[in-house]
Length: 267
Figure (cartoon, rainbow, N blue to C red):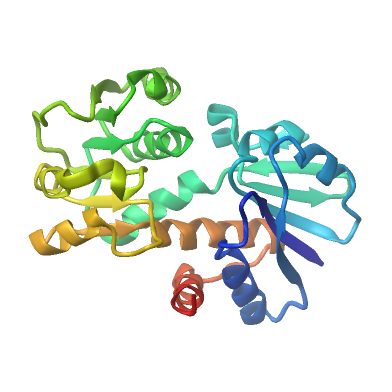
């Protein structure tokens, strides 16, 4: 069977390393490649795949298109309108979002407890996914910190639709409260010299960036003795869920994380 990860750019993806490691562990003679597919071209690509294609991982900028090309989808795709997994079965295309349950699993694995309050840096699609993750894990108060409040409207609406208290602050405003979890969905440069300030106002840090690692936030958290969850933890957990959806078999996220780390260190 054939599987692949699609996106643009895609050469940097660690998905091939993780999925191939899974196939090796499961004894499957499957292939998994990285394929460059540009924005607006997913429907054409999907329409041309053969019967030997079982599943596709989908990354930026194609996640909304992935939701649109499916015949059926899970509840997370329904809520967010974005999918990162397509599974082909007898002419049917099912769309899933493993980012949300993957992030929840990474938080649980970290052993930091259930965050009741959280602050998310950024307001884009990743921020919306992380917001839904936190809502589903029991967060009661959520704050978005952004350069432009208009960018957080979609993510904010996801939270409000779930009945959770939410507010949006500009990134240059002073931090008022301490939160259980700080989630960063923006590059380190966007945080600038405030890494220590953000870390000091949180009990744990989840930085979805994993390359290069450690990020400024991760370094500041390490210096402060604050627990850190990395984007690589999220990547491994969501990939394990993708493998299960595509193959019907389970693999350890830790095994996939090790494969990703090996590939990353070889660059």
